Image (cartoon, rainbow, N blue to C red):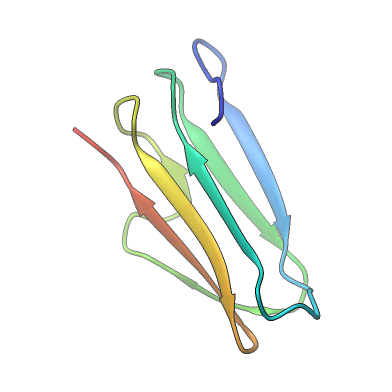
Length: 78
């Protein structure tokens, strides 16, 4: 869980990993935005919601790796 009550948070994820079982999940508990910054040379697939969790508390994000591709899925609650 990420406490972002009044201050926006940026999470930096390095997309260079040799592990195939990488997974990170995030749950928003405050009202401020949470943004993701992906660095490295790995391939990434990002959902249409982009890189920002801007929804209500309880919104979630999931960063996983499958083969050589990292996937970021953000579910912004209304």
